[in-house]
Image 1 (cartoon, helix red, strand yellow):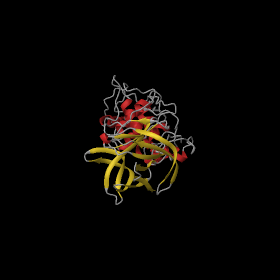
Image 2: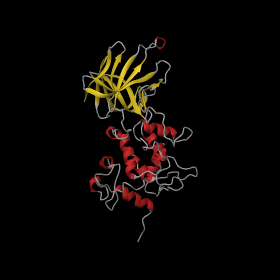
Image 3: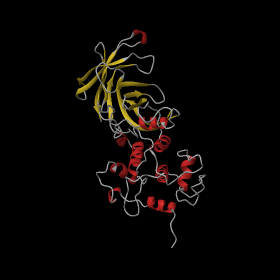
Image 4: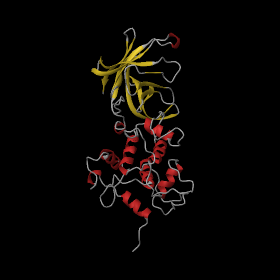
Length: 359
């Protein structure tokens, strides 16, 4: 009897789609059940011939590329790859060749691809930072990822895009391997706003990316909606917060991201502003990363703030002092967990921005 090659078995196992709920080893209580179900429904992820999904098994470099290939609609026809250990006869050669041509994956210095190696978190960061458009990046404070590491920039991008959040001990663990369930979660977060909401720190100030936030401002009513914008004015954007008028005419696009040390608001490919530094405490102050802004200081916590949308009782009050040299007239703004900035008031009491609705 003819034996099947490893490559053939791999593709057979990945080509037989089974509903996530039918997988014998995937309980609805699994941490990544929804993300796995989402990718199965999109024909990106499949189970194995024995009816299992194996969510806690390490995802191989070949499996990761097959998932990305299905997502991108790559031609899976077997062909030459250029990698010494992935001949054209390898059943994943088409996807691997296509992913390499698209510069989503790279091989090793010895010319190999090592398709059966389990993907590491560092490799995952490189792949996903290339797969998804991220028009911004953030400084990171992971204790095990330093600026002199090649993986630093990719981690910056996937952290800013709410694809990863790291571990509670403030590590990223780049050398740890990635399971099938984890990779499914990372992919789903790159694709769907509701899954991005899961990649946040505890007590996050980020807004719900599935909602539209409406503000009354000194310039008129603004509607902030999180959406996918392939490109604007010749620049690739991806997921951003688009700010529109009440009649849904575009004003600008903005970004909002958060790490364990700060919450930041800004514009794609442009300036960003640290609105809050963590841990929050009265007297904490910081300078913005621009010469045209006055320092900011937390002047109160647990503040009650009334807006047309609702009354908040747990706001953080941040004061920006007046500074004539910087043309800063001074103002106070209020930040609330899960809502970001809900109100801004000039020092003379004039309200310049407040939340009026969430849709």
